[in-house]
Length: 105
Image 1 (spheres, rainbow, N blue to C red):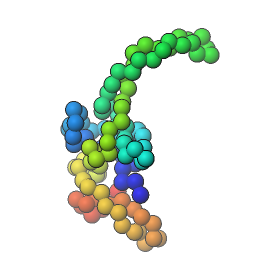
Image 2: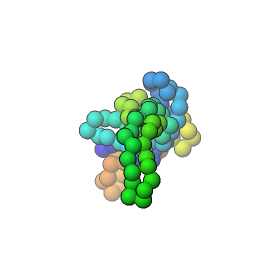
Image 3: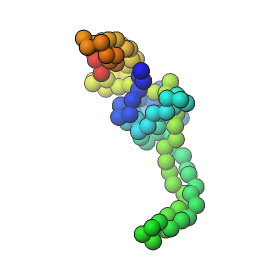
Image 4: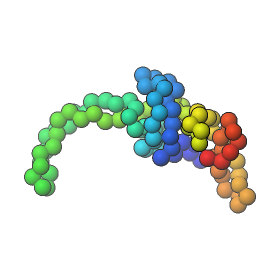
């Protein structure tokens, strides 16, 4: 079960963007990486091309790059960083819980 999912609010705990909070845009489980909105911004050089509408695109874009999932912590309802646990609910499905409060996320 993925402990961090798309749409979660997370806090960056390591790296050049330490202390910044953001929303998870994408999760790559095979590479153990996440893309967080506004974190690890890099310059991407794209080749100029013309779209089907005749609009030219290209140049230098600033986009978010992936960071390792161990460098982020989930924020709970009280905007406090928490570790994540997994337990079974009444129906037998795995659910994520906050280790700090014990409540379901």
